[in-house]
Image (cartoon, rainbow, N blue to C red; front, side, top):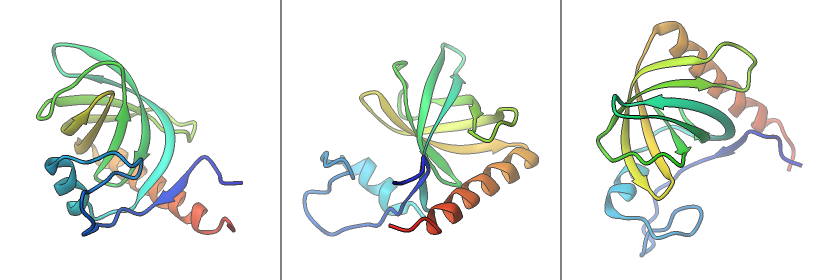
Length: 142
């Protein structure tokens, strides 16, 4: 049985048409983001609250890497929106504050965020959390 956090490694592929891990056709922008990704993504479930000046929404983080995350929310956002976030990691500590996150892609109820502005303590905590989750998954036998 796999734990709640699992390691997902994104790699580029030359197969046409490009497909997401769920098998959906990816648009050109999503493909470019996928190919530009340089960090492992850790599958996890945690909640977040976001605001962009016009609206406040709640969502669920589906996977995380050091520079960003995949979010699912019923509140629509657009590519190019800038958000502030409160991210609740499943480590029983206070939420992380992200002062600036950019929506890099959006499709249906899901969107990808680049986490740009965080204070140093929260950034270190997030980096440590992602690294520990990756290390834990590496030790789980298949």
